[in-house]
Length: 100
Image (cartoon, rainbow, N blue to C red; front, top):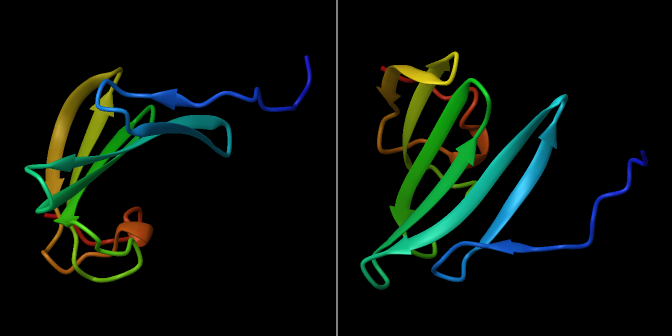
């Protein structure tokens, strides 16, 4: 087995690219989609124990404080806790943002 990544791109049914990112020893699924033409952007980061879903106005950079992020904690694959950030969260900092 090699450490080389296969040369393939996966797309969802809407034609949006889906990324698989290695985070330590966990592979995370990352998807970006648009909801209701030119108004909202939704980004997903799906891991084994946490799912992040970020929503912002279309065109919002991931490093700006304009995101609303939903954090769902999983136990044995089952959602056990759902928390939300403020409307001024930064998607790039999702793992260190404050949630309640």
